Image (cartoon, rainbow, N blue to C red):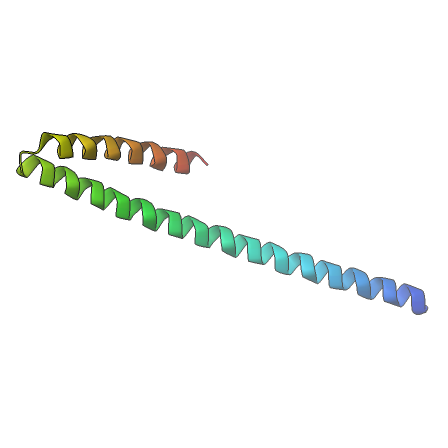
Length: 85
């Protein structure tokens, strides 16, 4: 049987191991939530850009259609950058 010092050392190692496991789980859950929230923001921005583009085209407003087209290109770039990560 381990003596008092060895027992305390083993308990300290067990506590640290459990803490690291919890920390790993927490950061994994945070990363998954961050991915979902980014995906929701990007999809919402895509829908907004498409609606603005269609509004600009049907209202014969070239500036709105062009700005929406540029926003759509920027969103495409963001989607590509997020997928490569």
